[in-house]
Length: 297
Image (cartoon, rainbow, N blue to C red):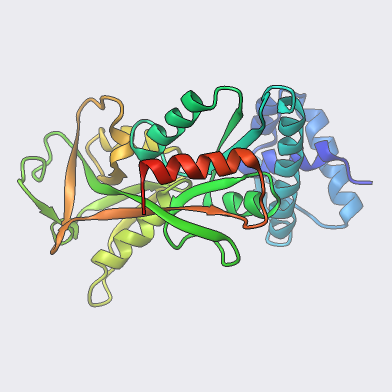
């Protein structure tokens, strides 16, 4: 029988590419973690990892298994969270998923309003990538997701809510930092860095669609880090990045956020709510009512 902690150990190893780092992250002995992963491979008859002095790299045959294991581990964790939180909310619970920063912006204001108006509802925020948000909606682990328009799968209801301006993030001494207006074409020779999760893939596709010309694609580096870490890298004055207004809720030293313009005006990223139509959670209906009041139509 496959045990959940074996799956957890395998997923942690895949994420950290190292048995020792995975063991440290899970606070277990490395020999225990290694043995459990080996037992899992023996039971499956599949080699999940290539082991070397540099660490552990997932094999091609192991990749589909690890992705499925990740979903199972996520579901189990969500079940535990749900069980813990049942007694917290006197008048229900709502789980809201999102992939954008909460430092500022419309989503932060909407959540703040909800927490103020419904203090007896247990509110659980789930920050995740688009794939996990979709899976969470389908499995009823998430009641509603807030994500850019057109990003989640068909079969899920949606409603447009708001848009946020797009900004290019520059070192403060960059030659474009003092421009009155910056257009996409002004950025065609720059090197971009974006995170691999959250809004990173959307930014990557957006940059590629705007700046690919005559077979020449823009230079985009994808970092397996948070958006906050990416912005810190920009401050080192080698790259630039893309952000929304939600990233400006804190002061970033040595950085400039300059609006990006399309021919018709400031470039914007449109957002929508996504949910399952068969979700009859009363706390979700209150969330919809609040959104309708704040963002009518």
